[in-house]
Image (cartoon, rainbow, N blue to C red; front, top):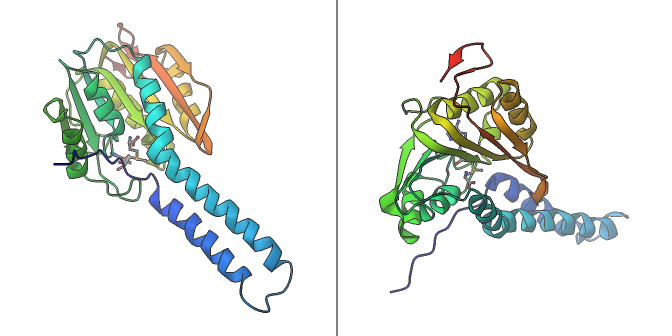
Length: 248
Ligand SMILES: C[S@@+](CC[C@H](N)C(=O)[O-])C[C@H]1O[C@@H](n2cnc3c(N)ncnc32)[C@H](O)[C@@H]1O
């Protein structure tokens, strides 16, 4: 029997579809008899640039993202017995990569499984991927909003989130999600956030509430727009969060 392969889907599938339809539309229009100049010469180039953008976005989800994932997770030097949380895990790219590095640990994923954010998104697809990668016994999933994590305080050694938090429309909601991540993180635990447009906000918040060792990576352009990684350590001492509440 052929071995099943994990499929992590395409991010923002509607955006990719938009570029394909626009590219194909431009190409079709340029061949319509009698269209005035400069359409017959200009539109094939416009079409090519949109179709190329779609191709790059598909390669980003299916190839480049996996390479970046491996680089990020290798850099964590996990001991192998940690309990980790992936917020907005989708079809399990980070989650399963983590579980593979945790022979004696546990990887927990939380998501709302929005198909507009990732094609074919569902908890079943994630469990299928975990099975295909042979890590299903170390993976568990919860359906929940990352602004309200269904976990006790200080449960995880590492909390990670990749390309998920920017999907929360308002700044306040994004900050609530990050404060939730810190709530469930053990003192001394590590937070790793990978994201696009809104990533600098996260670094600012983490510095503002005096997380330790806040680092921002250089950008990578796998999705054309810059992706950066922000890392921070939750201090052992209690800290004061943005709303001036003492958190542990
Ligand atoms: C672009 S996908 C990325 C998935 C995965 N982290 C990865 O890197 O492949 C964004 C994910 O965030 C999830 N998501 C968006 N907003 C969320 C929220 N408020 N709570 C939980 N999950 C959310 C979506 O359902 C989707 O699975």
